[in-house]
Every structure is written in structure tokens, then in C-alpha cells.
Amino acid sequence: MLAIRMRFLAGRFHATPWGHHVNEGVVEYPPSLWRLLRSLVATFYRAFPAPAHENGGDNEAVAQLKSILAKLSTPPEYHLPNAAIAHTRHYDQANDGVKFFDTFISVNPTDELLWLWRDAVLNEKEREALAKLLAALGTFGRAEAWCEAELLSEEEARSLTATPSDATRLNSQPFTANDSLAGLETMRLLLPDAQANADQLFEMLKIETATMRQQKHLEPEGSCWVTYTRPQNILQPRRSKPINAKRERRYTVARFALSSSVLPLVTDAMPFAETARFALSRCRAGNSYSPALTGKGGDGVPLAGHEHAHFFVTDEDEDGRLDHLTVYAPCGFNRDDVGALGQLPPIKRYKNLPKVRTVLLGLGEKGDFKDALIFRSAKRWRSMTPFSLPRFANRGGGKPPRPRDLPEAQLTRELRNRGLPEPVKIIRVDSYRTDKRPPFRWLEFHTRRLRKETEGHGLAGFEIEFLEPVAGPIALGFGCHFGLGLFAPVKDEWKEL
Image (cartoon, rainbow, N blue to C red; front, side, top):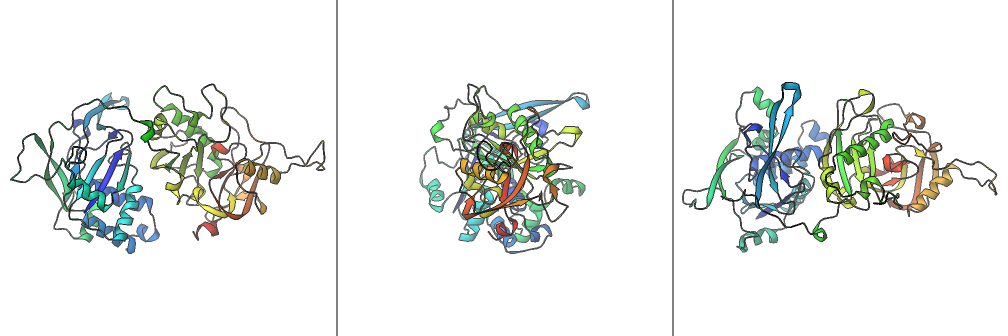
């Protein structure tokens, strides 16, 4: 027996059923199994890339995924929380004011949608792999449908059928000829064809919609329609109780992938991070103040201790261009912050450069992103962006009134202020280097704040080594909340982890 728990963190599930146009205002509830399996395949290639995947080759991970998909291809049962249908309207001024409807399911963010397969059995490695895929899912349906999914234990799965209470009752199943429709309504869901084997199913799930349209296929090959039932009043508006803040999960990290026709160079880390922060604050709903995003208390006084949001933009494929945005706030995000993170719009850039779209990869705490480069643990760290000196580098004689205050001393002081140990070795480096293009000298980086037009008192770069492994992130000096002074584990070391 196998079960999956899913919550929609923004309170919305956007999904148009197969064969319907978005302007029809039709919603898919419960979600179809075909949509879930395609999402797992997409997450596998997005979140766990490997050369064997990219070249279309087969390996142990792909074979394991095929087995998981095959075992999940039987019709599941659902527990559907009460929800309502809502929509927004958009007008395209470039096309004579054509109106578009964005219809979605509105659901309480704390309510859980459950999937149950009574006869599905996965071995230990397959359960571990499926749990990782679900944790990396991030969104389900359209990108606006921000979700959190997890695999339940076998004991929790059995409890869904053992307890007939309203909170756990399975209220949506495949319809059979012997079932009564009293108090129920029916809908069609797209599922895999039971005749397809694991290899065929995997290939069919990888086919993109545009390819199907070119081949004039109205429905995916290897799929079939199954009639399901659900309670008649499941989509009626209801009043919901206020969310108990004590039961909310604490979020301190939001990870985004960046997509654009031309991604920003690493030298644009600071202006891009500042622009991302401005875009995030603009889409924030509600009237409550956000200390995490502004870095100030309600009285306008700057916060101490670097607990507010850091905007780290990183080049994680080492091609010299920024490809990830990580928003890290040790103090935690409040509810309005979380809503804004789920609606971050494309980020505009200066000089009419192409906009950069953001794809949410996940929301959680540092421990949920151990594979992210800046959150790893290592003894040796190297500058990804220049360390901008918080004060002038005084090369005096080392005695009052002009004590020596070189960049190395300022670096050590910044580490101490962050509660980090002093390094046992500090080596100056002159640039950010990759294997794919010439190095970027520190003077090529943009280090002046866009709005305040302030900057540090000189630039330096370092490779530092600690006595014991230190967990990231490490960001120091002027502008450290906007991408400057960011360190990453030395390449040879993190590849061994």
C-alpha cells in the first residue's frame, strides 16, 4: 500500500483538464494520475540532472524511475479536501483587448489532498527515490500551483482505510457499475493504459504537448479515460478558520532557477539581486510589514545580526552566467512573504536586456537544500563574488593612531561577527574562474547599490581554509545581502561530497 500527501501552499491549484481550453473555466479535481506521472518525469530531469539523462541514455536511476511509474499506473483513490472554484480575468491589450480567464481551485493551504494505491508495493530504494522526487516537485499543475508533496509511511497509508472518519475518508474513487451515485457526481480523468509496459509508459510520458499537436494527436498515446466520482458539494465555498500560526511550518529558504534568452553574467550579481528584491516586495500582498524583506523593523530602524533576507545569485553550472536565485532569511518568512515568493514575476533588467523568468524549485529550511552549492559544508571556500571592504584598508604601521587594517583582517573580523571560526589559511585570489570562459576580474563586477548609490571601500577575493568543515552560506562584507562577498566550496572539494 502506498500513499502521497499533497498541500497547495498558496491556496490554489491551477490545472485545466485535457481536451479543454483555459477560457472554458473547467477545472480538474481530483488531479489526474497522468498529470502526476508527467510531473515526476519532469522533476527527475530538472532536479536530478546527469549526463546519462541528457544524452538519452539509460542507467540505474532511469530504470528505477520506470519501475516506479509502472507501479503507480493503476487507478488511485483520493481524499479531496473541501474547496471552491475561483478565477481571475486578464485582458491582452496587444490583441484588441482579448479576455482570458484563469480558473483555479481555491483550497485552504493547510488542507491535505491524499493519493492512495492499495496494491502498489515499492522496495526500499524505490520508496527513497520517490520521496526525493516528491520533495523536489515544487509545483503541480501550472507554475502558480505551488505545492508540497511527501510520501507517507506504510503505517500512515494503512490508517487511511482503517479509520472511517470524515478527516481521512477516501471520497473519490473509480466508478463501477454497481456503485450508487446518490450524493455523488462523476468526471473523467486521464490515466495510463494498463496494457503499456514500463518502457512504453516512460517514453509516452516524455512526449511534449507541442510534439503531439504536430502529429495531430488529440490525446496522448498510451492513455485512457477513467470515470471517477466525488461528493456533489466538494466545490462549494466555505468559511475557513484562521490558520494557527503555531502550526505553520517555518520557511527560511526559497530556491529559484533562472531562465532567459540571455542570462546575466556573474558580474551583474549585485544589480540583479537588488532588482529581484524590489520585484519581490512589489508583488507582496497584505498590509503587514515585512522585516525579512526590508531589513528594518516597523519603526524603520535597520535590523542587527544579518537575520533578514539575503539574495544570492549563483553560477552553478560554471558557464559564467547566473542560473539560480536563493532567497535566505534566517529570521524566517511570514505568510505574506511566502505568498510573494510564490508569485515572483519575471525580473526586469537595465539597458533593455531580456527579462529573466524565475522557476520555483522549493521552499524550506537550510537542511532541505543540502545539495545546493552554497549550503554545503567544506573546509576550503573560495570567493564567487568580490569581498567589498566595509572600511578603508589602512596600511599604517600597525600602531595607534593608524592601526593596520588590511583586507585579510577585515575578512577575519567579518567571519567573527557572523559567529564563524577564524580560518587557518587565507590566500588572495584575483578573479572568479571557470573552466568554460576567461576569468572575471573583481574590478569587472558591479558593486554600487542601484538606489542608494553607495559602495564599499575596495575589492578583494580570497580562498580560505578552516580547521574543520564549516556549513554555508558564507557571505561577508558590504553588499553581502545582495550577492557580494559570497563564497563557495572549492571545486575539487565539493565534487567529492
